[in-house]
Image 1 (tube, rainbow, N blue to C red):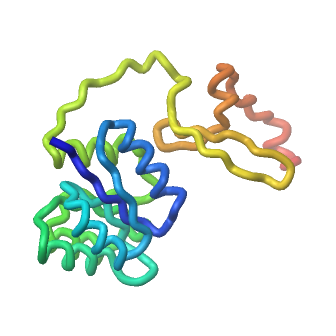
Image 2 (image 1 turned 180 degrees about the vertical axis):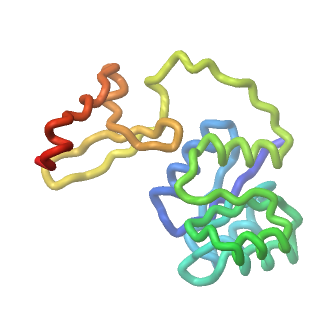
Image 3 (image 1 turned 180 degrees about the horizontal axis):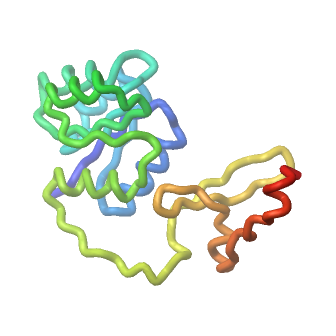
Length: 177
């Protein structure tokens, strides 16, 4: 049985990171960046779970949910940067079982998706800190790798070498220099 997930978010970097993370969990993941393409993709791929952003460029995520539910009964995980009472209430009315507020740890999203699919995962050992998802960011002068650890982006080289950030300098804190 193939467990299919549709990720709908107009933030392409975030959608790509979610796709990579869920792919690594052994799920079949598709991505859409707006509401119209999400509705079409849901019809084509028949996902078990849709990870849906509340704000899309062409419509609200709830409009996508209502359109998909006309033809498909699946689970929804709402992701949003707008944690208002109205959004939570509307999601509850529409039967959304999980709401994650941005930024959120990808592990928390994976846990919600796996729970909705009934997939049980064994806890992994925490011994290897070199694993993770790397994103390359471009600055004017150089590329530098960032790596996601528990929801926080850190320079991957710092983690890989075991180095810790420098301790705060009390004199610098007092003077502001």
